[in-house]
Length: 313
Length: 322
Image 1 (tube, chains in turn red, brown):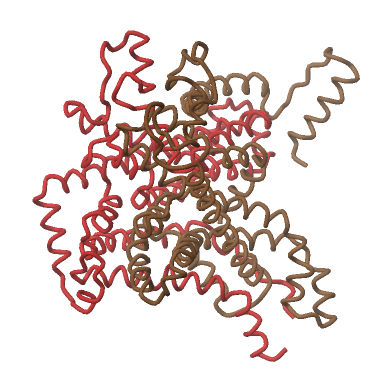
Image 2 (image 1 turned 180 degrees about the horizontal axis):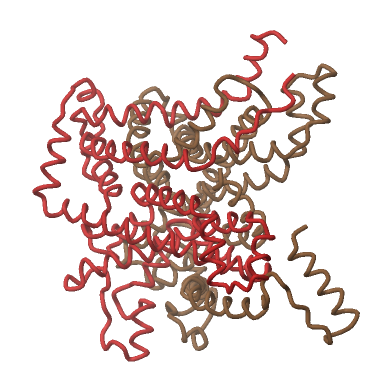
């Protein structure tokens, strides 16, 4: 077949996806880094686009070191990311192991149940937890504790100044923890399922109990999956903010203790009108994303997944 | 066939024949029944808050007050909250804030975004998935790797720049098609987020289809495009179904993109921003009516979740692996 004909055919199949990738990933990525070096404000592209400056980075550095609110954001990002990461990876591992040792019908029910938070519309999921942690006696948590007699007046978990930052952090970790565990669960479960059954049977015949089986047979075989999930979750926790966005907007949690770096970037760009500063702050995330993304790509066992097409004529 | 399912068959078969005199010991996990019971109980206790918060929301939408647990047995249930929601009254005593048709429009807006995202994702990834599965070209591997890498880039950084492009492009759009353009841009921008994983997913579905029929078609001189349309697409229907559901739910659940591109930029509401606004306006919002709004928004997700459970779970495993 003529070469130009082949190229035409390949382009037919690839062009819609490539067009989307170019317009919504490649150009924006370059543009985001570029915007970090402009003084862009209030989306006034005409006035600020051509001006090169590093003032956004200097300003950002000043804020991190001097502004008490922004230093709260940095602390929250560190605590929230590491604590939720542990919850997500360990929780996902425990769920996957439990599902692995259960009979299929029961296991299926649980696995899909834990998928529900991920599929639930963000606004509804936030509403569920808004109502759960509500500071008045109407909130589920307060109402239950009052009924049990454990507290005698309703507690504003996320806003009472004497409980911060612990209260706010706890809410953020719980809310995101329930969404995040399903990722690890799915990856670990399919990894566990692909371990040859003979190995497990052999270990059982040799008299291994469940704990030994997990420790000596199962965990060593999924260690790369553990690393992969950890990196990937770290990346999502650093960059996603949808679930936190409404909790702070609705005042469930303290405004600054409840803001992570990604949400700070979003607010700078879309509420404060400081797109130059926001883009500079986002560029830091882009750099982290690039490093962690490349790292997890190496861990994926990429070559195995890319077989050559066999029937090319 | 896995050992477990063979054993399961043997067990069932024997049970029918010899009744319970034979106790079959599964050598692999010794006492799987007991283990299942134990684990299911522990997991059940951990999952309880999760089930509870969903249950309380749905029940509260029919109740005379927000429920918080034991009171689900004593509350009075009616359709009152749902009536008030559709009448536009966010509090029983308040005047209507919007009309019935306003709410219908909000629901239609949400559907348009979700269906649009599904359509864009399905078209782009069934095309690209085929090329990556079946065609040999220079940048094939590099491009596939690059797609995964794209998935790793922070959405918030993209969002700022995509919004800048949006602001710039608005001046080129005639006023009379502005609303359509706003929807189109939102759909394309949101769909792009799903593109990398969806291409991987579709490539996986194409990889599983045997080559033989395709070979004979290609040898007979059929073009690639014709083969893709006539021979392969009918065979990946389950994959297309799973992908459509996923992409639809992704468009349906989205908050940030509809908030930025439709609500802030154009004053166009969807169910997500409707709830955002309702709760943000908490002095006038009466929680059971907000619960009804939340349940309404949750409905399609729950329906897909219940009826396509296994499909979603399998696709999810295929999708996130890649």
